[in-house]
Image (cartoon, rainbow over all chains, first blue to last red; front, side, top):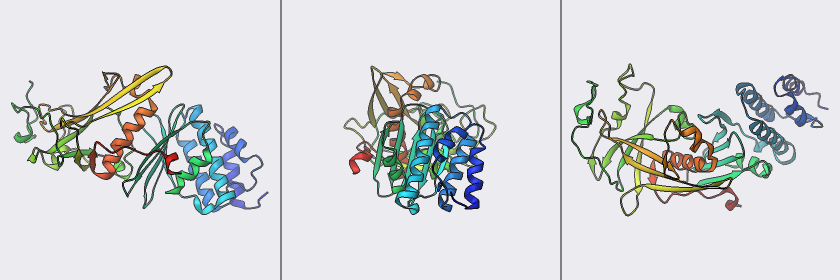
Length: 150
Length: 189
């Protein structure tokens, strides 16, 4: 168990969430090094902000977010914490939650629809144009990796 | 045809007896009024994905409107003449079909139903804005409107996403290209 004070404070914040505690607990169970990296602490704060800001997320959206948090955590621990980069979020007119990143290579959007589907989009500065669809049975490691790859 | 009752609209923009335009050409310009946030991320959608308005700027080398004209409010109910805090994006038509139309078709199977959507660029003049154009969408030949949107296109995640991607690519690239189609992520690996 980490003695990092920041980690302990963040874990405490997440576990005190009335609405989403059970989602966090399933992630933090046996993940004693979760969010220890300052970079992943920022990612954790972004997800906490998402859960706080959007009160009417559907069960599907919550499940997808939970899976993504897991995979972002895996990237940090098992692959390379430097892979994790800052991202932003918004809810569109159709109540779809969108995570997005803009880099010098282009813009990546991950749209979590109200049900059934997750849409990955990349529009590159070099005119590249990528669109793909995923669901709950998809490889979330693949999705998470590509969300940060450009 | 009802006339324009907004005195601040320049006469050159008022639709009187000009014939609607029914052909588009390579090099034509469209102007899209947007929020600054949409320049940062064209995926940001604040209204139903249907009847997406633009102004026609240049058609077959003829100047139809100026870039700033798309900032005029043409709603009598608005208490302002110019939309505040908006940006204008210029889109250049790169390719249309042999009939000089811009039409794209999309398919989705949901449940047991096969849906075919069509998005077409149309000149849609209104009394106070002759240059007004729209990207109009139909699903299985039903025109999608704000009133029926939630029961139709909103529910079709894949068609909606493909349309949103095409519109976003146009905005990022500043061009409208009939041949522009996305690759899948899995084909990259």
